[in-house]
Length: 439
Image 1 (spheres, rainbow, N blue to C red):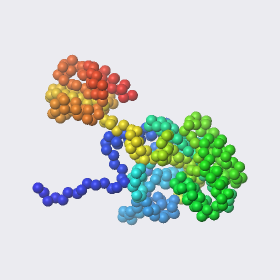
Image 2 (cartoon, rainbow, N blue to C red):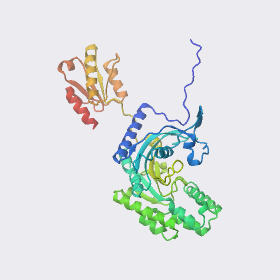
Image 3 (cartoon, one colour):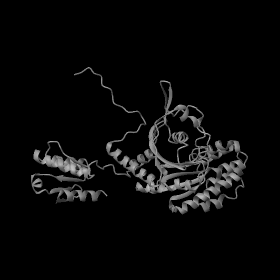
Image 4 (tube, rainbow, N blue to C red):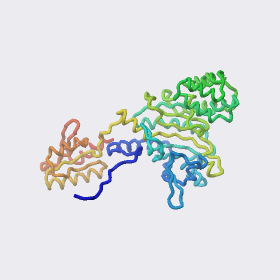
């Protein structure tokens, strides 16, 4: 006995931790998305998890957001990053003179927010961003970021639905009513249209001085949904405000670019009720959903923002980007049983019987690994039956039986654990077969 007091192992609430079999699937998802980004000519970037507080809080004018993890170390005032956009702005500002613009970067990394944990929301989670920055960005780049969702979701065996709008449309309408100084407040109200009963939503609009006629026109706008031609026909005559017209024209250009990029019509919908991020975005905005599962909420979103680096350098750097909530997506796929969590870290297990066959088995394992095959050997002194049960328990798809007869003939028994089919093959043929099955 010992008087040592044991510490109860426990984990901070809302922080991310997966079992090894889950982590394997999650990393496979990350690899597939990274490959899509690289195919689309985005460059990888990794920024520090910690930033100086005055840098990270620059967008909010230095205010301490209650969700940000902030602390001091010596003389340094430091924050854990809460998104990947401010670090991008800092990086672009620091390297403005050496970067080639337009600068296309992707980053997948953990971010931290001290909010209340709940279903699908964590304090530590991965963001998966792709952004394009430059001093003058054509709307083609907006379309490229929207289109990027299709190959990302396809790589994961999913279909996507994307809803697109332009913030200038609603902003222009409110300008035309003389509410130019209240646009941000009204955008916050519009963002609640799907979260509140209609009666409460209308009451909020009236509290902000909108008349019944103005509310009717607003509903015409925010219920406009469908193809671009359909929404244009529905709203184009509501006002002649120049900002409103500019928003429609930009949306039309984005639609043309998406058509040229062969965007699937079934994946695309224009929805003018989207606000997204309050006053952060300035033009095109969009949200992405798993097709047929919109009730699960948006899995990603993004849009265009002006003056990305305005807090750091005297340059007008524009940006447009898309993001996938990869932690949220994985959580949904797991809870909806849409992914297989029974995959194994081992492609083939090797069973031997004594010291002599163990020596041959170790040589087999080394040869297989050198050919890129995930091979492992059962080292424990267990019975053949116990080793086969272990292979089943670990979901190992193939087993190589390396006994005395196999060693003498230099031909080994390869067993398919799913079908129980067994074949006797030379090592070179086993390697060829396993490589082909893994393609």
